[in-house]
Image (cartoon, rainbow, N blue to C red; front, side):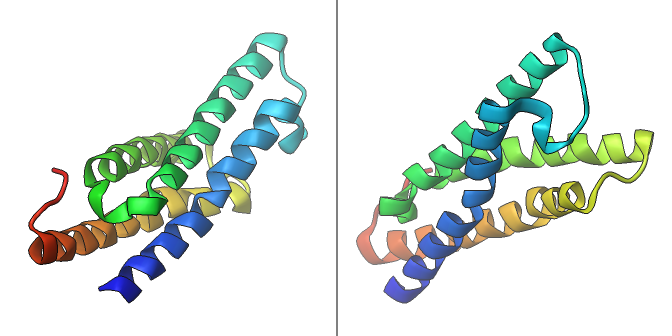
Length: 136
């Protein structure tokens, strides 16, 4: 179990680099990532959403030290990520294919994050069996 827990921690740490890095970049540089010129209001909204992305990544990192007891937090964060992915998927249907980077984000949001969430549940269940405690 200790080995699986460690692998899960490493996987979450690595995957969370994506929202932390892209969120921080968006906060600092706004729409520069896309190369599109937008209004000041759209720029402000982009930076706000980038801040949320940064916060989600930091919250995932906050689960790392005791990942086996943070089931509720992991599930909430995963729900937020999946809702974002579904929103991106709706946009894809309405406006067409985005860049490869955005399609990569879609894969992380709708496949990778839920898989990590299920993996965390498995680790938490093993921990609960061994120690008799787990967060709901």
